[in-house]
Structures are given as structure tokens and as C-alpha cells.
Image 1: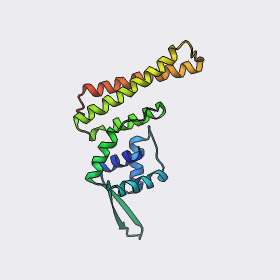
Image 2: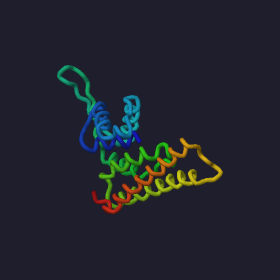
Image 3: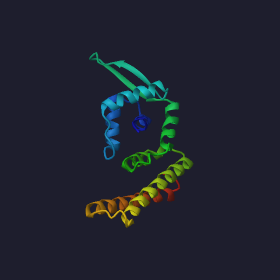
Image 4: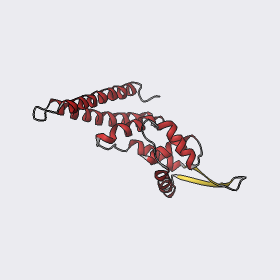
Length: 173
């Protein structure tokens, strides 16, 4: 997911590693906050893959600055990462799905539709799993577990409603 965030940040303009970090923080602080320790190797992987170029400059004060720019191949990689299947792990699903939906503006209408269907399908499966556990007579979750499961089912229901709203827009926005 870090590569997706970096490529998305660089869609707007050339940035330093610090600028990438701030851009990700500004846009995605509600979902994630990658560390510099995660950014540096991800930037190196993206550069080695031909998805980024870098430009080094010396400031008037003698400090080296490295600016990163996304390449045409990097733009294609961003689309590929957005359309890549999400983890089926419910712990990661909502956060990663929200990030992907937040970046959907770079997709073509048919690609958006594909993204929405993929995310909605998994959200429906996670909602069903929570509801099945609630309704399972052999499981009998205790009070606290039941409250949390009920909340999870409700959260997935709301998320599905959001996706359906995006689908009704026809992937335009």
C-alpha cells in the first residue's frame, strides 16, 4: 500500500521524501501514517522498477535535496495497484479499501467500476461473516463480543452504501 500512496502523492507534483511524507499525512492521516523508515525502501523499489525518477540538487546552503517524479510507467503502476485485489483479511480491508477509493480519481470509468465491484464484493463477504457469527447458535458470543460484531456489521453496511453511491455516479467523479 505504501507504493500506492507514494505514486498517488507524486501524481500532483515533484516532491522530496519529506514532501511525500507530508502529502500522504495530509491526504490519508485518517487511514495510515507511514514512517520515513517505510518510505525510503519503497522509494528505492519504485525507482528500481522504473516508476520514479529522481533529481538531485544542491541548495544555496549546500544541502543536497532529492526530488522524486512519477514516470509514465509509474502512472500505469498506480492503476495496477489500485485494481489489484485487496487482502481478504478484515483487519486490513477497510483501511486499504478507503485508501483505494480515495485514489480512484486516477482511474478511467470502467476501471472505477471494476474497483467498486471488487471492494463491494469483499465488504459484503465481511458483513455476512459478522452477521453469521452473531446468528450462530453454536458460537454464542458474549455481550462485549456481540456489541463489537454488531458494530462491524453496521460499519460494513454503511461502507457498502458508500460504494453503491459511487457506483450510481457511474464512476464519473
